[in-house]
Length: 199
Image (spheres, rainbow, N blue to C red):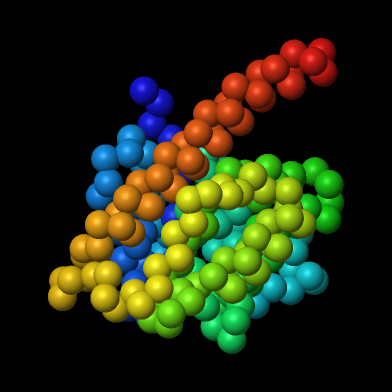
């Protein structure tokens, strides 16, 4: 069985973030996926068009773009700020959504992506996840539709050590990762077919 490489990004910088804890829970599940949690979000500078070229991008931005390109898929966990996506997460995605020189390719383009989120409110991160889906419409990313992992009242889903303890959430998370793996499978099958068709 192929072990797909997944880059996991939490939209929260908080040390005890439930969204980062969701990503750690995903790592611990027996899914056959190799999940790496990205931990440099805090250091990414604000998006600046004047520096968005291969020669002028900050090294950390180039590294993020390279990691996204190399990954078979992305797993994003987002909290909800003001009914939308945290600025640090949107900023990182902005850096990964461009190719002004038309020579590099857009790292997010057609990338299989799974979205989830946790929040202490009754609605979880449903609005933030909708906002993310809008972003990925522009990049033509291949986003998992269902199951939705909207971890509402998230403080009740984790134990004192920060481990995911809610069986329903664990089941939904397992299903989300299976759906992401299936999307990557389909992408892997269609790429050789597309290459042959273009010969």
